[in-house]
Image (tube, rainbow over all chains, first blue to last red; front, side):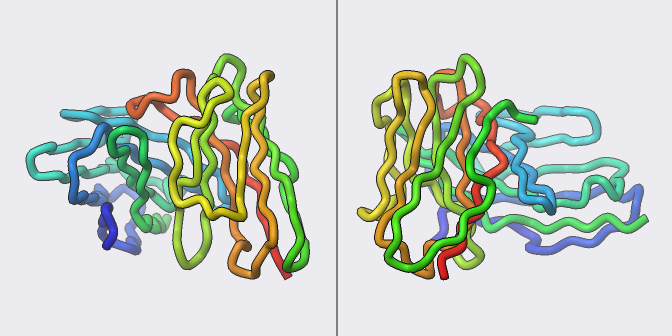
Length: 108
Length: 114
């Protein structure tokens, strides 16, 4: 049983499209993180959410605590957004669980 | 560049051997995390240290051990290596080690066990 489920597993979009990646979790969490992993392997933390919504540039992340669901949106997608996006949750006191990732390819 | 450094970048070794992976956190960060990323299991949390003390333990095998030194760098020791230990090992750091903190990831060490 995986505490974190992501969908879709793979996503191909045309440049400029609006993209949504979903994450569902099954237990109470302290926080939810969205991570980006580029083809070279490096991981960057995009957002930490405990409630509501955050925006950074063309990226928007939302979380609904009651529904145990989070979404990552990319507006006006660009080929440089091509990466694997990983949802991670922190369970009290300090346990971390990761989704299997969504591989995004943005075609020019 | 996250400010977290890991050495070595690549490591090739044989089954049964022992290796040590090293991580230096960002300046000012007191907490270090270790993660394993393999093709079949994805990313898994191994262990967390805060200011030299173990704070949380995840799916870390008994053959693996870690420590954080007074200068805050950390080492992950993997012993009696098996083929299945081949993976990317990431270190991350944060200031206080709290669950709602952003973690900064190192570039990873790619381990291949032959």
